[in-house]
Image (cartoon, rainbow, N blue to C red; front, side, top):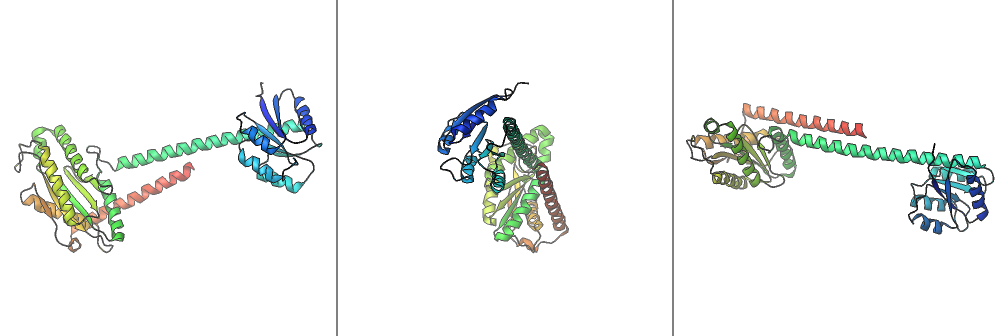
Length: 366
């Protein structure tokens, strides 16, 4: 079996030691070696930095001008990937133990080892270093795989909260974002606004133009809304078949009403024909707006119900208009409020369970 050629550097100021090592290594013809020699540490560091690949270093611990293990540490830290064997003038168990703990592959006392012992020590050091490099490479591969899995997981998490048709958030994404923003602004004591928007007479539109056209126009409406509610913290979600919800953190009722008016005007500007509408000859929307400073003693769902009631009033008053909920939302109490509260708490539980699964997966891959 062919053995790879090895480059070994010996650092010693004793030329006789170098010749002894050269002769000992030359006796093993199955272990081809090129031996390089440097007299000083400074010379050896410059040599190692020259670019010639060195597979192993033999360091004379008693080299003139050195301070024993301090010099070992200096060269080992500068070139940690090169295995290093120490040659010493005498047996010092404390120094030997300290050297091995610091990273030396072996500790040989000059005059007390045979050529076969030296060759075995070098071979074992090279094998251990090879295994270490292989292990490090596998760890890097595992870390890369873990990062890829995490990216896939995040992508799947993102897809699970995106509506496939309109590419805005879906109902789950709305629930998670709404509850998260409510809790955050409850701490910050800033207002949270919500707009509920519904396309007017959309069933009649589908019956007239077909569901395929209806889906295309619904995408157009969603993208128009998303371009208007575009702050980083804003969230546009498909709330139902033809309805959308717009979450506006740090926004009072006046600011939310301005956003709602911009949405209504932008959709009107699309001028999508709707001959079956009793409200307008183009596609229009009705919007309900509500805003509230979140309070930990108030159910988050009351803001949803307030916007829903405002939307209902807008539709009852003829559609294609904006209605605001002017009263304090916390005064609302109804069965629908309780239903919305249950749904939001279920969304929070699902979010926590998903994070626990992700954390468990990260522990497993590590």
